Length: 517
Image 1 (spheres, one colour):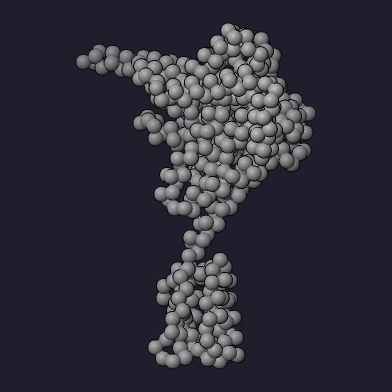
Image 2 (spheres, rainbow, N blue to C red):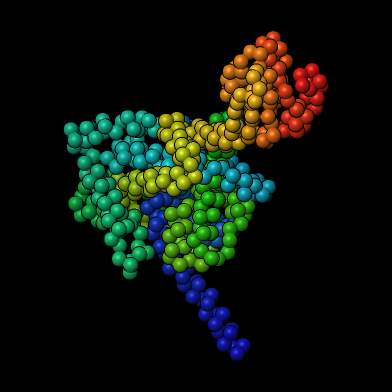
C-alpha cells in the first residue's frame, strides 16, 4: 500500500512538470512577438523587450508571489516609456526603471500590495482602454512603416493625412498589406480555430505566415533590427545616467508613475489569474517585491519595465500550467532563441508586430465592458469614459488623475446625497424644513435656494430626525439664516443639540442654541 502511494505521488509531480513544460512553450510563443512589438512601439530596440521578457520569466518567475502569473514588457507601459525616451533619450530609461523597481521593493516590504487595489476598477479599466486607444492610433502609423507622433491627439489627427499619403505615393502599401493580413489571420483564427489547435496562438500563426509572405515575395518593408549578440546590445546603466535622473524632478515623477502603473496592472492581473485556477493563491506583497527586483535588474540592463501581464498569464493557465516552472522556462526559451537564432527574428516585418499591437490595443479598449459597468450605474460608465478620453487628450498621468478625481467626486456626491423638503405647516405663517441624508458643502447651493423660498414672517421648524451627518459649512449656513431671520420677521425652531449630534464633534452649537432656539 505504501509503495502504491509512493508511486502515485511520484507520478503526479512528473505529470505536473510535463504540463509546465508544454505550457511554457505556449507562453513563449505568445510572448515572443509581444516582447519585440512592445519595445518597437515604445521607441526602444527590440532587444530591450526580449531582455525584459527573459528577466521576467527566469528571475521574477522564480520568486514571484503569484506562481502562474507571467511577467514581461506590457502594452500598458508603452505610453509612459515612449514619453521618457522621446523627451530624455534611451539612456535615461534604465535609471527610471531602476528607481521604479526600488519603489516597488520598498512597497512590497511595507506590505502595501493590497493598497494598490484600492483604485476604482472603472478608473483602471478606463486607464487600460485609454492606453489601448493610444496604442491603436500610434501603431496604425507603424503599420505603414511610418514613425508615429509623440502625442495621442497628433496621432489621431495625422491618420487621415497618412492614409492619403499612402494612396497618393504608394509608399507603405506593402507594409500595410502585411499588417492587415496579420490582423485578419488573428481574427479568423480566434473564431475558427479547431479545438485540437486551441493552444496555438493566433499572433504566432500570423507572424509565421506574414514573415513567409514577406520573404518569398521579397517585399521591401522594415524588418526587426536585432544584433547577432544579444548580450552586446545591453544598454548598461551608468552612474552618470542615474545621477542625471535623480536630479531631474520630471524623471523622478516618471519613476513613481512607472511603479504605480506597473504595480496596479500586475496585482489586477494576479487577482484575475487567481479566478482562473484552484491552485495556490497570490501573495500580493511578495509579487510586488518580485516585480521590484525584476525592474531593478531591467533598469541596470537598460531594458523595458515589466509587469505581470494577463494575456500571457491567461495562456499559461489555459495551457495547463501548475507551477512557476512554466514562467521560468518561457524566459529560458526566449533567451535561447535570441542567442542562437537572431537571424530568424530579423526576418519579421515591423508592420506585422505593429498590427499585433493594434489588435491587442483594440482588445484593451473592450467596448463591451461598458455594458458590464452600466450594471453599477451610469456614473461608473462616466468614470470609465472620462478616464480613457482624458488619457488620449492629455497624457497617461493626467488622465489617470482626472479619472481618480471624477471617481472621488462621484463618491462624495453619493455620500452627500441630501433630500431637502420645504412644506407648509399646519398653522398659517408656519413651515417645516426636513433634511434627510447627509448635509455637506456640496449641498449648500440647494439648501440656500430652498431657504430663500421661505416667506417673510414665517416660523420655520427644522426637522433633523433623519439627518445622518452635517458638516461645518452646512451648519454655518443654517446658523446664519437663524441669526438673520428676525430681520425678515422669521424665526427658526430647531433642536440644536440634535443637530450637534450629527456633526463629528462640534461643541459651539449649544451656545448658539441659547440665542436662536
